Length: 274
Image: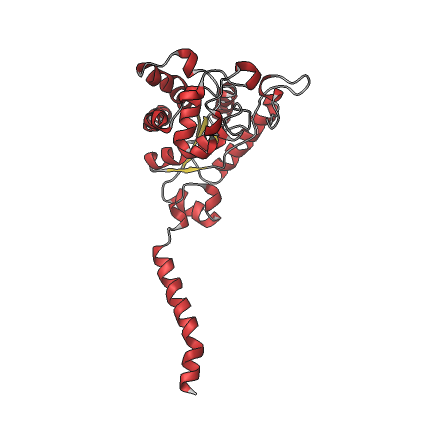
């Protein structure tokens, strides 16, 4: 009877031991900077412990040529937000806003000429950011930081930050539109490629060498590398530049530069309000 009981209990003892070992080695969810990975009590405890900066990453769902996925901006800004938060040491990251102004529907303009692109009006976009920021203030965040991976809505980020700062003038809470993030990923990276001997025509302004190389460095699955060898047709394909020589190696050096410049800009903006 004793042997039978031990035989019955043995699998459960093993499972309990394995669960204990897993608990000791598995990463704590509190190690994640992303709000959606945390419970409400973990967010409360984090803000009380000094993590009072919230990064609001803005992406966009738009065409990026035949060789790059529609969610490029969303993937990149989430990637960079995590690294920026880690470098700051006192920040969490809100969910990526994947809906942004991308052109008109009727007649279709800008990226709306291509299937899969999603657009919303400027007013709706700005209202979402305003409402989210007010909620962050309510929940204990002191610095609301907007960073956007797309150039078209930078003016809206500045407008939202100005509106909030006027509204919060008598409080210690501030909003920051950090355009330096976009400038670093766009102009800053282009300057690096020029130094390597690439032309402006190759670097491009959308889905070209720079855009594609940065996406490859962040996540190679964002790019259909088998389509890079085809001659680009420019505007007809939604490509402004030449992505054929894009590579992970070209994009990697930009990552550290973008993070460093953004962190510097955030710290400078926060210091100005003190």
